[in-house]
Length: 151
Image 1 (cartoon, rainbow, N blue to C red):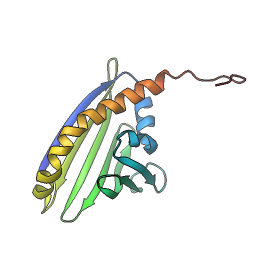
Image 2 (cartoon, rainbow, N blue to C red):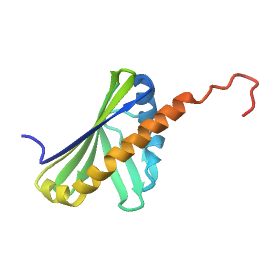
Image 3 (cartoon, rainbow, N blue to C red):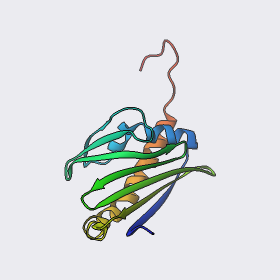
């Protein structure tokens, strides 16, 4: 059965898929959004690991990594009567990486959540993904320090 709501967006990023994956799986980088106060993860970035995002607008949001293998991950947010799923893929695409985020809502109350948060997600995800790609590109250009160099 297909999800009750789907939204997908892609960005191109001028870094390798390996760099993009390593950057994104360091959840400290998820706080690029001004609404995010902090993020906690209870272990390594792996399927089954749980985490919490503290948002200024939404408060405490608990989530679970449902899938994690190089280049593909899925984060699930349990909601009363539904589940939100955010799938990420990192694919080689000249000159760098295509990053895709696919969001879905499923469950008895998914249509209610789609009406409430769907437009906000659809409006904010493209800008958030562009910020992520820009941050990755900026981080990839930072020169590495050799021994004895001062910052």
